[in-house]
Image 1 (cartoon, helix red, strand yellow):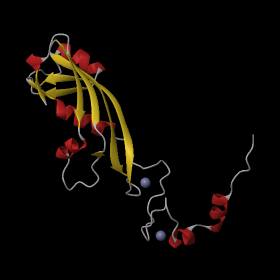
Image 2 (spheres, rainbow, N blue to C red; image 1 turned 120 degrees about the vertical axis):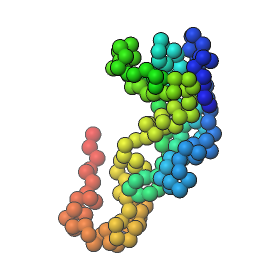
Image 3 (tube, rainbow, N blue to C red; image 1 turned 180 degrees about the horizontal axis):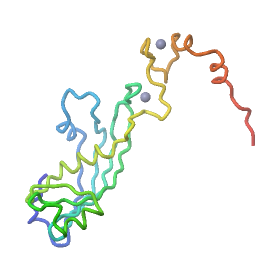
Image 4 (cartoon, rainbow, N blue to C red; image 1 turned 30 degrees about the horizontal axis):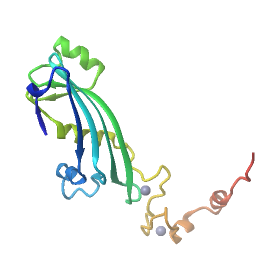
Length: 180
Ligand SMILES: [Zn+2]
Ligand SMILES: [Zn+2]
């Protein structure tokens, strides 16, 4: 979806958008196995308001992504609920221009061609920005055994047992008695 800037009313443009799960696949390489997948419709509220020479974009993007854990390789669901706010500046304006500079100091800004705003690009970028830095199915994912490849979240393999110092094993099994 492209929006020509002359289509944006003075009061701003409010959009409620929905994107089907298949939509995301056109923006990732087909052989990229670790790329995020959308597993439910993406719902977006977006507002674009002209402010003199630039456009302020605010929005909320919600959906459910399927990501692959970087430690164990298992897919897991990631709830996307991302609010964003930034300024779009036409490439014909340098951000050094006083007016833009003032705003750009306070907010993130991005360039566009000065005529058409590519809404799809905004939606995809926000998905990638919202992804966690550490992509893990859980904070304490045990990963895979480097020797036999067993998923240590689900099973304990024999190689891991022989590696663990018996004293640490005793500590691992120790549970504090419940106290109140
Ligand atoms: Zn994991
Ligand atoms: Zn193993």
